[in-house]
Length: 67
Image 1 (spheres, helix red, strand yellow):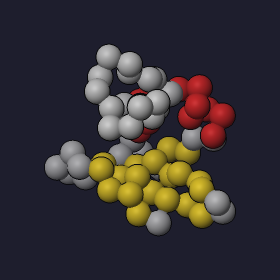
Image 2 (cartoon, helix red, strand yellow; image 1 turned 60 degrees about the vertical axis):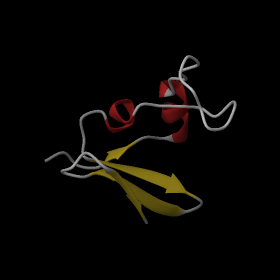
Image 3 (cartoon, helix red, strand yellow; image 1 turned 90 degrees about the vertical axis):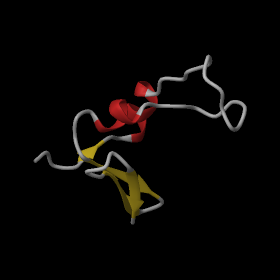
Image 4 (tube, helix red, strand yellow; image 1 turned 180 degrees about the horizontal axis):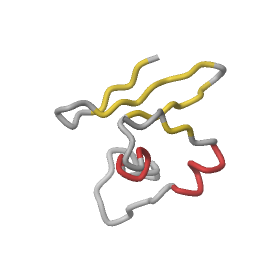
């Protein structure tokens, strides 16, 4: 099992892949593939305003974000 992947804000913005050919709910919203975010891991830790959030990929290929 992989440990949670931690990406610094600068790294995450450098890896953001905007897909202009796909419809978006909000114009101008950035888009990134979950595969690119998770990079083979099942969990990603996101730091936000001093807290940590965990983005997990479930056995059913669903994403869950918890604090």
